[in-house]
Image 1 (tube, rainbow, N blue to C red):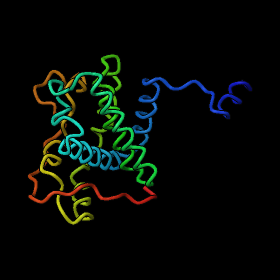
Image 2 (cartoon, rainbow, N blue to C red; image 1 turned 90 degrees about the vertical axis):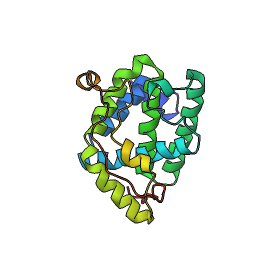
Image 3 (tube, rainbow, N blue to C red; image 1 turned 135 degrees about the horizontal axis):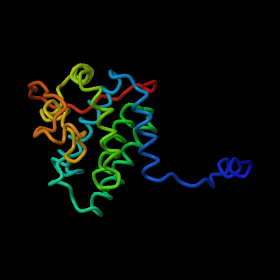
Length: 195
């Protein structure tokens, strides 16, 4: 036990496996309120759509038929991890958590043995769906312009292959439909350092 404490203190601890990292992320999501999860889902959708629109991710990446080969997707996930670290360094915690939600979703889509964890992520995010529109409206008001149309139509889309067991049997993989968007486009406003 003392040896483990010494190893941890000097950074010699055993690195977490992908399953352990994602499991801890899910525990964090589970501890959040539904309203907070709505904000995370809103920001994650904005990040994903913006990255798709800027060709950093393939458009429609949450559809299995649109997934790039595993080695290409791994490079995209490294880029997404850099985005999350950048948000974290800026003190934009909400944005960092949302970027990690997209990252962990892609990790689970990329590895069949992690799909069950991806389903758990989306069960947690699904708790926030009722609060997404409010979060998006507040984000647009703070930014002064609307988000891309796709954000409003895709925030409730559960990635193909990560639907819960009862949802997988249904044709639609939406948690709930969104509302009609406006014309101008905005990115997510910076979150405060205390978020």
